Length: 422
Image (cartoon, rainbow, N blue to C red):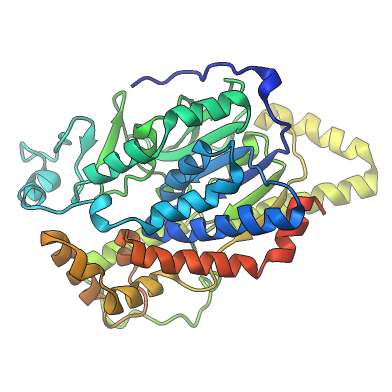
């Protein structure tokens, strides 16, 4: 496995770029919502427009990185992207993503203390995978067998996709490393914000797994001596990489509910168990740099640029560019944005599905015991964050896909205007 510059494509084969980007957030099994939303956009909105919708730039974190790579494999056939992604989610069972066996149970002391009792990181199970309470070998097989990285490379070379970017958190420094593969084999000027580091690579399974390596739960991933965990810990909604890669129009898919800021949310009735506390920690970390802040800042900048141009003419933008290029390496520009996000908490849906569905009955061995225990811990509360992250099953996915599709349909007119450039 090597990090390398992508091969230069034939320029005359590249479709015309519209500089449209899609940004896909992380959130574990909640990512099925993104598949439903995408299906409506790529099929119904495309039909209303009378032409296919193409995303030139795909940026994803964690499960958004998984969804993004599936999309990249079908960048030459965009109308199929949502359909294929939904089929994959609907066919999932928990055993396709992770396992809990006595082998993992026996290794808990090693996971906690290191094999020499000194807290050392040791390879557990297979080379390059470090720690983790659950065995993610099934996810690795899923990535290797269902994602066609050869198609991704060919689509980027042919210009069907200008860039693919996946975020992971570099464990030693805490920085966000963005693995980037581009059509021209080059990196643009990158963010000057401390802690944002681009890495020009040819995207491989290890990069995807690193982006989705939920700490403590899934093993960290070693790539050429650097240890990576889930990218959502620092940048769960990668808007900045999409902009740096040239986006002028950005569709953001967030898995935080629209009512996340509602102060009347149901309080936690008692101090949560260790498992549920872990879920709340993940939620807090991944919401700490949510899309809300980045979008507000971007829209504020759009208003400043528009006002300055109206008040002072084109010279205003030229003066701004002169000032900022030295600082940030690129000019400011107006960027259209639209965000798709669920109306209500998807983890509440997980709580309902696990109680009324058949997922626990269909699970095996210790995995069944794990799911039952996590479900029981959420009996006295509406939200069960850890369960939402872990419930990779078609029964849950179908409900989220339905919600994503229907809630996106309610935004039909906005989407048509957005992709029409109005």
